Image (cartoon, rainbow, N blue to C red):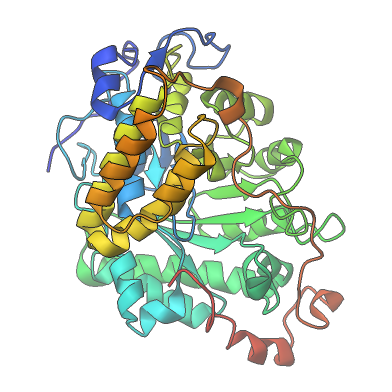
Amino acid sequence: MCLFGVAGQGPVTALTPAVCQHVGVTMSETSPRLPHACASGRTPAPLRIGPLVVPTLVELAPMAGVTNASFRRLCREMAEAALPESLRPSCPGPLPTPDGGLLAPAGLYVTEMVTTRALVERNERTLAMVRTDPAERVRSIQLYGVDPATVGAAVRILVEEDLADHIDLNFGCPVPKVTRKGGGAALPWKRDLLAAILTEAVRASEAAVRAVGRARQVPVTMKMRLGIDEEHETFLDAARAADNAGIAAVALHARSARQHYSGQARWKEIARLKEATDLPVLGNGDVWLGDDAVRMMEATGCDGVVVGRGCQGRPWLFADIVSAMHGSPARTRPDLDAVIEVIRRHGRMLAEEMGEDRGVRDLRKHVGWYLKGYPVGGAARADLMGIRSLDELDAGLARMRSRLPEVVDYPGDIVEGPRGRAGSPKTPRLPDGWLDSPTLDAAHREMLSQAESDVSGG
């Protein structure tokens, strides 16, 4: 474990060719320097989230089936390679600061969502999901829960058993099987329930820290959406509840549950939230490029950004965001050979994490994302979707490469826009009578006792 001092206003070091070669990407110096607060060539003042010191204001959003330990590490390593030299760590693992804090030099990288009930019941799969990579700087765990007592019990497990340095609560999931039982993005409509969950989570974290004598507090944050639809916004009331409960920061996906992932994120609502609360605010939605992250912060005044679908098949997006936030013009522009090397490394990391058979199967979806926009052909894509081992992965990539020109350049704009399935607006699935009152009645309270039983993510 290294002791790491937060540098002052130190000089920026660009992402060098040697660093790029290490992470398997090429670079371009063509991106303009943006008129951001840190575009002066000096490192911005770090954000504090409880004891966490975050000089680079970016967070990897939890994504089920995506943000396992291997993907988190890949994103974080690429981000750290792009840091100014004064912030770039030279050792793995936690980085305590002299004042008792914990440094996250390249941002926060959050686990897949896990359900509080499954954690409390010691579900084997869930316990595996919260056992993080020892190399992680900050162990950030996202919890989903609808019952204050169960959420509190899950928080106590994470804190007392030293499994987390940061706990995030999910109130943003728009998936019908979650919202139809009053969970996810539907839950903040019930203001009393939301306040009870937030209050109990913070209380449980603080009590557990005292009980076991941990060296630092474990901050609790929350992620939410604008609301259920345009007529039933919840984010401003939710932020007030968060502030009253002692939540350390809030993240806002600037879409409603009805929007799902369609249309454009409404960044102006992030600005409304920032004006309405003194809590740190992280913005989420439509960050596809490093420059988008800076534009969001400038347009909204938010303190940082959360990145989800934009990094699918593009873990180097975090390097671009780091460069943009620290005033460097360096941007990653990987040719096909660089992407192939990232795919191979990702496959080996997954195999080490979860075994070769499961790891290679998990990689398949990533391969499709990695190759988006590169002219490899449908037959090669189909071939790689059938891989069953690392040897088959290497052979499939070699066959694909042998049929292509000597140099296959970065495709440009085609890979720099929206990724994943945006879909179209969907009428949110809600419990009968859910919108009749912003307070919880007895019937809905009973229904919520079953809300976690079939939620994916643990």
